[in-house]
Length: 100
Picture 1 (tube, one colour):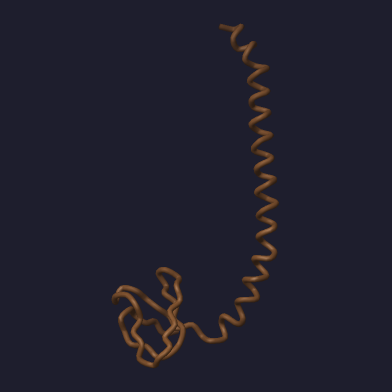
Picture 2 (picture 1 turned 180 degrees about the horizontal axis):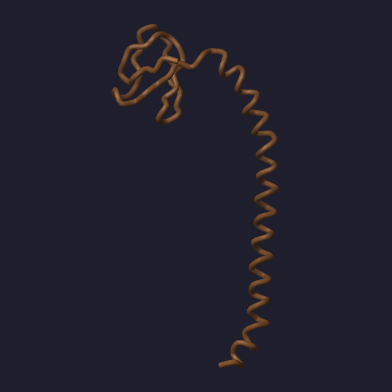
């Protein structure tokens, strides 16, 4: 896969900035890539978004509800820990004060 530098003329296509992950669309044949020569780009094949979009969509459909449920369970576990710690301190506080 050929890498391109920022500021260079490129053929028509879609390019991915490797540093920031942003896409740049070159509509005409002699467009220049944005940025300076330090920025690196690769040309993205036209079929790649067609193949990967459904896969990412399926991942969001499956993972986002799962993350919501897991974060709610984590929140409940955190609250249970706080409540049990406060109850334990209420029980131990008189015992600890008597030893002094």
